[in-house]
Each structure stands twice: as structure tokens, then as C-alpha cells.
Amino acid sequence: MKRFALIGAAGYIAPRHMQAIKDTGNTLVAALDPNDSVGIIDSYFPDAHFFTEFERFDRHIDKQRRASDQQKLDYISICSPNYLHDSHIRFALRSDTNPICEKPLVLNPWNIDGLQEVERDTGQKVNTILQLRLHPSIIELKQKTESEDKKSKRDVQLTYITSRGRWYLQSWKGDENKSGGIATNIGVHFFDMLHFIFGDLQENIVHFNSPTKAAGYLEYEHARVRWFLSVDFDDVPQTGRSVEQRTYRSITVDGHEIEFSTGFADLHLRSYEEILKGNGFGLEENRAAIETVAAIRNASAQGAVGDYHPFINRVLK
Image (cartoon, rainbow, N blue to C red; front, side, top):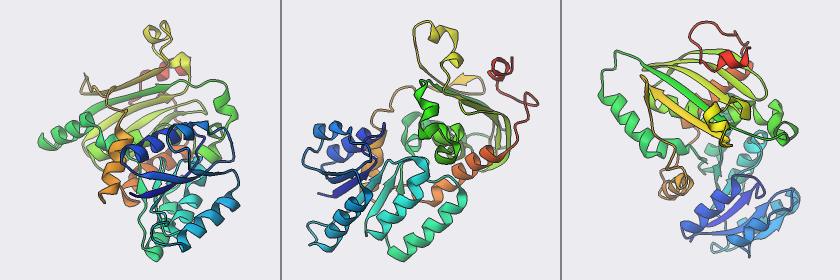
């Protein structure tokens, strides 16, 4: 049985990590979050130690590190705000554990370089959650793409709308310095998926970028991609809004819809299973996506020019 700690226990994604730890037959021994609304822990690991102050959590983890082999931690799962991932990964590595970090791994490509140095110094391995690489439909599409004529490029349209309330912009997620902006916060795993399937990125054009929505054009070795991301309910197509559907997800390849609306529920479990086998996705596998979102964040939006996503017409009205 492996022993885990968790940073960011009160966040939206933390229960998926707790569930995965439990379902793989392991245990959570300590958790940290400045917010003490963490009753969800009782559903998984009621005996876990809980801390609201990093200093006390640090002391507890250090005591575990110095204890007998039976008490030492094996992994620290990181579900904290995006801008803290780099620091918390470093803490986990220096604590002689293997971190498991939620997406986005970091906000900038140079953070990966620094983490690789700490990884080498400590002998530990950073594991990351790139769950779409494990989705059956995405794996099937990758295999199909690799088996077909590679001289032609696929025409891809990616649309992802995940509605958020007024709280979103008041939280750290609405602060670009902390979240990295919308493309980083809700889009990074899609950009990783596109690189995973269609190869190296060749062109990156931003058509629109705001705190609540963004759109652009990406060209990969084997695909031309128009993309649109939003947390605005008004961007959900009318047929969805009429029935209070708050999420809309679509990927088309050469006009054909890729069905991947199901199969998400167990992707964190699958990720943990692979990590525990030694097959986790490491630092370098995140580089392409982090470079992509960092470039989007720093680019000047060009407006509705060239090959742009049709939803842009609504935004620019």
C-alpha cells in the first residue's frame, strides 16, 4: 500500500484524486488547504491528518520523511492553484516523494527546465495528469491518424464551453497571473491532446482572447485546427441553453464528430494506475502544451482574419 499526501484538498478536482487513491488500494495520510471546508475527506480517508497552514504541513511531512520506511510518504498529489504548482512540485521532490500534479503542470516552459534540475538532484519523478491521452476515443483517433496518409492535413474544429458563474472572475481562476488565463486553465489538456494526435505545432495565431473566452488557429504537422474556449453560458448553442445545458464539447475532424463525451469519469483512476506502474507522463511530455498556452497568453489578438472559428462571429458582434 502506497502512502499519499494531498495539497489542495478543498478544490474542485481534489475528490477525483481522493477517489483514485482509494480505488487503487492506497491511503491518504495528510492533506493541506487554507480553506477548511474539506468534509469531503470523510467520504474517502477520515483518518487523514489535515492542515490549513503550510508550515505545519511541512513539519508533518518532514517527520514522515525521517520516520521508518513504513511511515514514509510515496507520493504527494498536487491540486493547488495553477501558479503554485511549480513551488509545490519542488516541495514534493525535496520531501523525497514523487509528485502527481494536476494540469496545467506549470504556467511557463522555463518552469519545466527548473523542475527537471530538481528532479535530477533528488532522484524522484514528477508525474502529471494528461488524462485525454488515456481516453479510448482519443487513442483511436491517434492510431487512425498515424495509419493514414500523412501528406495531407486534417481540418479540425475544437469547441469547449464550460459555463461558470460570477464567482469565477472573482477567484484566482480569473486572475491571469495565477491561472494563466482561460486557454491555460480550461484548454491546456486539449492542446496537449492535439499535439499528442497531430504532431509538432507549426503555427499559433490568436484571434480573440479575454478573461472568459478565447479563440485561435493552430497548425500541426498533420492538422489545421480552429479552436474556441469559453466559460460564458451565452456561448452554449441555443439548443443547449434552452434546456440549461451548461457544458458544450465538440471536436470534428474533416467534418466528422469525434464522440468523446463519455468515458471521462475514470480517467483519473486510469492515470493513477499507470503512474503506480511506472508509466506516468513526465515533465517533458507537458512541454508542447505549456509552450502553446504561454504563446497564446502573450500574443496579440488579430480579430476575425484568416481561418477562424465560426463562434468568433458571435463574440465580435
